[in-house]
Length: 346
Image (cartoon, rainbow, N blue to C red; front, top):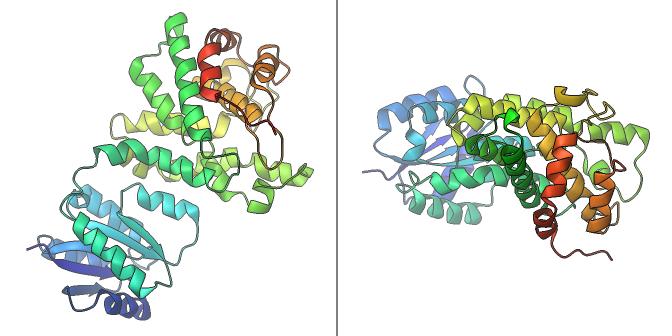
């Protein structure tokens, strides 16, 4: 019967707090590192309903435990609650991608932990129903970024819809790009990650009300390189979320993160790429991001009226974009304006 809990944590004090919070309702196995945890899991696989997992551990860390569980398809049957002292958003993003059922930061509140454990135990046995979760997890990554960036939680959805409108138009008018419906969907899904590197930008820079200093702007621009690096480190995790042609998807996501601020005339960043040296996926997301950025109100700027923003992009006033993509941009104007919707210009 699957009714036991495995606690994997290298801190005896933290393990005791967790075991005390679990109480006497469940039988608990304990492991002081990931290696021992995996050994117990292999022996007790049919009994364990839930794993409470630390991340930062010697010998074998929590990510390695999650990877081992994924390779054996155990995440389809066993709920995982991550309990960690790691405060970084990148760690949270990586954990949820496997996916886990809950993420709790130390120190735990025992009463709240007990309630969240009960929810995880109810969920155990049903977590093989992952299709909807996997379809939405990339948006969740974007939402984590948008939770820190006051640009608004709708930004990710706008980027995806604008990217789709532009990519479909490009597919229909310019067959030389060899876009297919599957490729368009891949670009759209990856576009949700375009600003993931912003999790590494300090709040005082990300949400500064006013003009950035040259040093602050250089730091802000680094979200492109940091985003590309994060995608590379998360390659195995993203392969779980996007198992079909995962290598291509990771490359697309990397290209978008690193190059969505490049410009066709070579005056963008970080690599000052020119023309079609800029990956096509990044070109598409770039123009979508520019339009939504201009028409959205933030703590550091007022929104530009959408018709004016459209004209500024069309005429090159807002940066130089590929001629064919600009034609698609103009052709998709009605759809793009619908996506932006009614603006708050106050």
